Amino acid sequence: MPGILKLTARAIKPPLPNSAFLTLIISLWYGLATGFGEGLGLWFMQVFHVATWKMQQISMPLQMIWAAPMCYVLVFGCVGVILVGLQILIPRMPWTKFVVFLFSIGLLVALLSVIGRLTPLGTVGFSVGLASAFLRYYLKHEEEITAFWRRSLPWLAVATLFALVAIQGGIRIAERRALAALPPAKPGAPNVVVLVVDTLRADRLSTYGYSRQTSPHMDQLGREGVTFDSAVATSSWTLPTHASMLTGLAPHVHEAERTVLRHSNITLAEAMLARGYRTAAVSANSEWFSRGHGFGPGFVRFDDGFYSPLEVWMHTLYGRTLVRVVLQKLTHGESLPMRTATSVFQAAIDWIGSGQSRPFFVFLNVLEPHTPYDPPPPWNSRFSKAKHPDAIDINLNGRSAKLTPDQLEAEQDAYDGEVAYVDDQIGSFLTTLKAKGLEEHTVVILTGDHGESLGDHGLQLHTNALYWELIHIPLIFRWPGHLPAGRRVATTVSMASLPATVLDLLGEDKQTMFRGPSLTPLWQEDKPPADWPVALAEMVMFHFGAPSDVPSYHGAMKSLANSQWHFILHEKFGAQLYDRMRDREELHDLAATAEGQRVVADFTKTLQELGTTFPQGGEAPRKHSEPVK
Image (cartoon, rainbow, N blue to C red; front, side, top):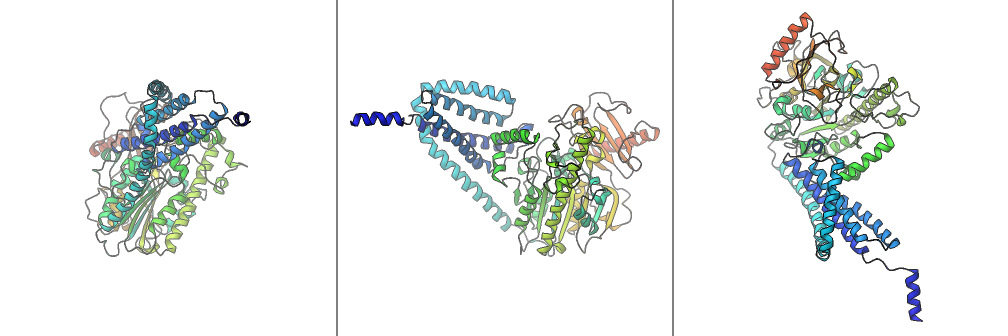
């Protein structure tokens, strides 16, 4: 009888496969190993500046050394549980071989992607080959390797927890030490807030003449301070422009055009730290304005990520890939979810705190209205005529996509909605500063890092040219009681003057740390100094992610602007010249006219005097009447 009961029990409930527990061990081990490999690898390659161009876009804070293992052990562990369930249902399959092969591929794809030298298909193919070789080796040494996994798994878990405690604790200790080591600040030194609205072209703000009421709070800021009508970014994309705003240097000098900002360049943050300021940066554009790209020195705190669990997951290879695939299916877009202006301003307010005895310097980057143009309700319908604005494909792929009139209108409506959204958040941020009693003692500087093409010159987005809509940015200074309210400055200025201007506002008009010139004389006097410099912008040849029919794909560019002219010199296509007063949309190239040739010659000489020239060689310049193809 007992024997019959045993047989019946086995028939009703088959025993758990012997390899099930081993499957869980393997999945957890590979999860931790993959996380450590990817986190350490990316961090190492960025720190030592050996990452490929594509991998440079992935901000890799030190926290990824513990965060990546935690992400992957959860994901790989869930896959392991699913495989265990399949083993129970289909016990006859050689599950251990399959599990080892599958997770080996997962590990190798992540590690090879860190190196970034292979195409996605090549990475998968090479990983399959290496995993096959390892599987053969495993079958010959199964006991030894299995024992190694069992013994090392607890140590990997301990290492993850140790990295978490050590890194997070180390960051807190470093912040406290940095604050304790600050020298005394100058009595009465004002707080300074630099607020950079990424991809904000000036002519989409009401205060710069736009017909739509997109920016009531920014307009009010201008009425309370000084507005520069012709501020020029030093390039048409984030990395070089932020480097110029913090160093006071042109892109060809600081060299952060294709690589990180070198630590030999002194920054405004370091200058403020040396003057006893608490310093912090909060960045929504963690792809380019981040510690990994050399912007960390001088900032006691640099908040460039880890604002949500999803954002942590998106730092990993598989997280980025899965989120991108989901977005492509649901929204037809390719950009990952980004940090909102709401999150940036809240992080800044939390850091500023209240009742602090030291002045603070905080540098903020908010990513709206950067693509994808996807403002939240109710701003998504603020300017859109569509019945269901959420259904519009406003994240159009390609930097020079040929848009229908309806698509272009939807794109511009959504961009304006993003401007209105970020303006509302700026209003809330300024209101909070006032509620904390900080308004009267805080210099607020509002600007953009570059503009945006919205169908102008047949282009979309940025990083493609140096036309006026790409480099004309807003610039407003407000310091109640110290700056003339409502003053407008017509002089064309460069954003590279920001560091010198900030130190001038602190009472250091004779400083030699930053080249300048300071902008303060322009609101103190009726006319600019006779030797006021022209504004320089530069754009390197840019292949990554750009179609072949945009100017930057074919060569580098230089741009000079003064009160009358905007001059653009392309490395291969030659010169373009526009009359800013009579041709605001830059539709008529005057470089071939008699007057234009004289102006081009003068501007070309100025470029040589500035030391910014093109390498010798290349194609002959195009005729000025020939369109860029």
